[in-house]
Image (tube, rainbow, N blue to C red; front, top):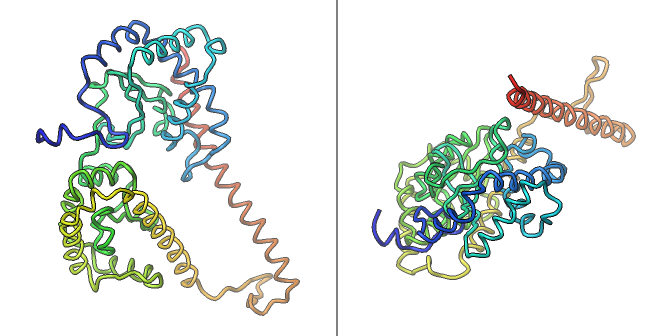
Length: 369
């Protein structure tokens, strides 16, 4: 890594691997002697928040709380710590809170950070002085302890430094197929990847403040590196173009042309110093969110059109839905609503049964042998 790269400012929520002597000294003075109490404090706050967080979002992407909700939990814990009353905590947790406040008062840092955890996951955690603090350690494997505190060097938690690294983690973690964005060259310098999920969903990635700051900090070269890769299959390129055709985008004739244009845009944007232009990130995030909504809506509409002409079969007699009376259609809508609710409840039951098995396994592991 070059000296200039090491000395650049940290990206938003980037873990810092250069821990200052002052941070180490404050950690050793205020936190390490009472580390068990500090952990008890974080755990007490987390346990206090769990019921409300579970109520707000019992299921995320088909998974029961707390799975997949590390960011929501981390943000809630940080907010709660600001105003929690020491007298409402158990004695060990209260002592830990006092140590944290002494550490903050002396100038110790407490940052919410995001990065690559052990090459397997994207994780939101905290950098507390020279410590790694994960208050959502159970959001991938629910049987794990809710809170994990380690020396930062021992956590194997590193910044995302390239789109290549991001793609490798995302492919393993999300099981997505990932291709260079040769479909929308104007956005490619900012957002150089297109993901296809296991269920067929298509999205541009990664329109976050961190990843935009990453490519802007090096004048679009990180985007350029992955955009040089071979184009996506022609069938997928044409499929995405069909989904976007109705929205007026200027699309390339084929993926090879899209590759050339995307790389040209990186050079042109760099020459125009667009990576230094203020306000770029919010505009890009809004544009990408709109495109991803359009892709989802177009895919849904396409799937609806591909369905056969709707009919209704009752007592071995098949009826054309378009020919039903208004009264019959009203009754049918009621039946469809009930069927949808039954299906939703059955899915919810399946999710809760899976969660119960996980919690039961965790309970067994916690019981004395």
